[in-house]
Length: 43
Image (cartoon, rainbow, N blue to C red):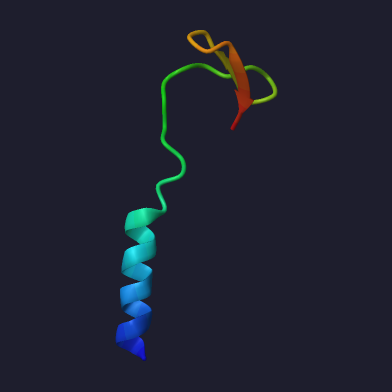
């Protein structure tokens, strides 16, 4: 059972890369605009 849990944890840690850091300052709300796509998003 411990081996199975370890295997699941290893797989999840390799596949859960949903957030990538990127450069760019944020405003007072913690948001900024991507000038290439004109998308405004918050962190």
